[in-house]
Length: 369
Ligand SMILES: C[S@@+](CC[C@H](N)C(=O)[O-])C[C@H]1O[C@@H](n2cnc3c(N)ncnc32)[C@H](O)[C@@H]1O
Image (cartoon, rainbow, N blue to C red; front, side):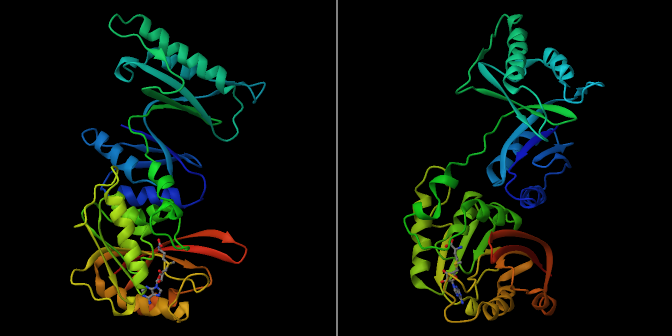
């Protein structure tokens, strides 16, 4: 069975890296095919766990817009005389033969998304394909479908690239509500410098942390990273040199525990007021995700950021289990590769995000040896 993923195109490497990390973390075996930038197919997925894994991906992924169960994949017949004429008759024939009863029970909509600037009349094709689905239900005595353009029960997604068209049906919607509702300035405790919830979630995913495992942010600030850890039901430990931040993290996590889409209670998180260089937790953690101060806008407690990074790396290893991941954001001008060489860490991957002219944020994924 196959899943069709419409990924965010806001970053070149993070969406795919995040997907690969979640597949590995959740032990979802499959083959990954990138159809074109932003469009990915997961092939040979195990039938028994298909819907369970589909749901996990929909819950976890940040840089992903839609996930669909693939129902059809056909070639486009490009006209020999004119390359611009796109013929999707193969897809239309498939639409005629699909048993739509197994996908639709009440109403539906067909929506097309174009890739690689393929030149097609999307509304005309949506109408044509919708008509084919409707016609198929006319022969059915028990069910007849309706088109619902605004709030359909079944959503049929068609994606067209220059070479092929794929169609899928959406069984689980990706819930992006909290990315909007819990933006840093909308949380009860706010302090500037908290990264976007989406990037925080992506970093949590890159850390390979699983539901029920222990996630630490030793520069927790207002708790933005821990909130994303809560969304995937990890157990959370935060710490910060500033007691106001430590309290702010607790205020924000407590707020989340009262929201219906969070399943955490006050037993699932704790926060400490401590300098990371003195942090010695009783229980070693499964993953560390963090955004230390860059020495520009966030407090460094009076120390140079390079010095803090080095000391942080030295002390954090103590608190991590063997093979635990550390996903860390840092400025481009801070080269700590030489520091890793001396310590028991290996660098696994690195992504850069241009913030403005003089700052590129680097996301490094590191594993304790
Ligand atoms: C960039 S902010 C973290 C933002 C956080 N991710 C959030 O969502 O708000 C860095 C935090 O590191 C804390 N900090 C600075 N030096 C520290 C140290 N030596 N040990 C622990 N925390 C420190 C600061 O108080 C600040 O809250």
